[in-house]
Image 1 (spheres, one colour):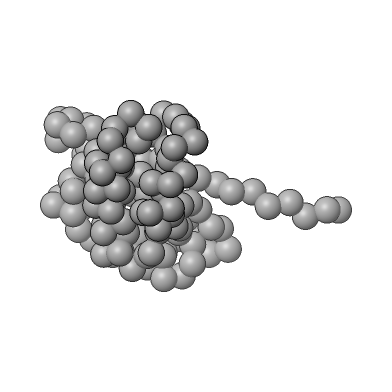
Image 2 (cartoon, helix red, strand yellow):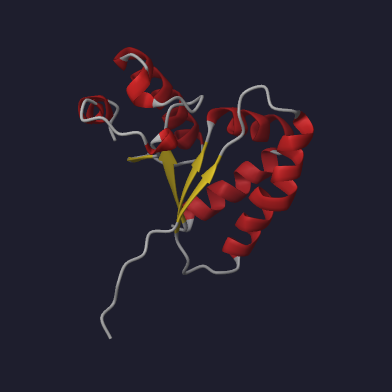
Length: 139
């Protein structure tokens, strides 16, 4: 049987200004359980994206979760995929803003011990002009 490669990617986002209880419920019902289950399957590898507002909330409210992410990254189970920090449609904002927002999220990835090289395109909006910006951002 021919072997195929499958990329399993997860997108985790909460918008800026969302209610704290929404973050908490999503964390308890989704974000935390997913990583705990992933930890039980060391051969499973996942690409994952977190938006900036969600990472800020996690850092402030659930810092132990960051340790879990770091552990999974170190084991080679997680690949962090970045985007614009505040989840903008990159093709709709000026180039300078694109670069700053991507760098902000890359900084979070570095805090987790990961040098992000992949990108999540918000709303999957693509424009050819993004190639140059992504290249400049080190993606």
